[in-house]
Image (cartoon, rainbow, N blue to C red; front, top):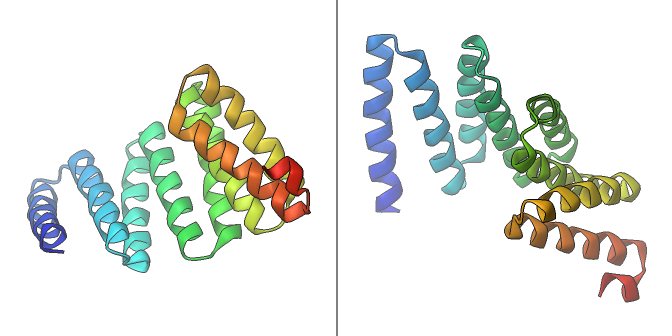
Length: 168
């Protein structure tokens, strides 16, 4: 915990400096990092608030990919809070940006996240569709962590459908 406290202290100092200088781009990056630390500490409501501010800044600066990254953070944090419908909303927003930018790596991860949240709202058809598409992209990029998560998603989908043979 002391490492988190040190990180927060350093980030708050950086935040104050960027605010004093009016340097919005640096401030957005610091807020993103601060949200990550708050999330890692389990302070999910604080992380959401901080991510929202970072998102506003990145959007105002027309930083689309970094804004979509924040939308992903918001989606993952909403997921951790059990707010699955909200998680899907954030991930769908980021999906559109990554599709438009042809960012295959982030696209694969986002599709996996949509699949994961779709499982929780019991939309297994959509969960499987998004997971399979994300798996295809992630395999083509040799993104093994995302491939592993996608395969796990498929197992969960089959298990929840009662198809235990397919789940294994």
